[in-house]
Image (cartoon, rainbow, N blue to C red):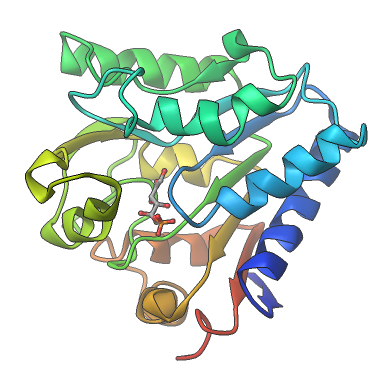
Length: 241
Ligand code: F6R
């Protein structure tokens, strides 16, 4: 594990964007695994700035997102499909047909998980997976469990996650209770993993995941075993280690 200690959120975002832009420049048709949430927004903003300057070209990049809420259509403002379009895809020259996100309203949930797993395997190895971390140490929506789940699955969101994510919804009861998420094997199979963490509210999760035992109760802890894992965290997120 490599740790990049950043001063604050903006510095963390620039550091993570540096790693991703190097990947895109070195391999223009790379496969990027992408995350949503507050943590990577600054990273996307930085990548967009470099794209606007003419320094980055996403025309051949292919992407696969970690997760989506079950029950939300891609036009729903809180869906992760909508998030990705507004925070990144619509603002760079990526081909929408090269982007992949689980379908939140698929009628057959088991079939949707299988479909998404085939999408991931069809793309070959992910070159780089970008992650955030939940306050309970989750990566993707791999919530605390008794075992690490390998592939895409439907997961019941824990109370901690519902509480953490309710800030995006008008009412707490609007927060979906289930999500599709890529599994731990999908994430661990990526050639390179970069996780961004910012703020004191992530300090316990960072300590538990990267300085504690490897356990499915803290799914991010599995990254300690990844051969090319970079934690990009600001001082607040690293304040307990
Ligand atoms: C999002 C995802 C989640 C988030 C995590 C942190 O696609 O997979 O694991 O990265 O919940 O969310 P934020 O960044 O909003 O604190």
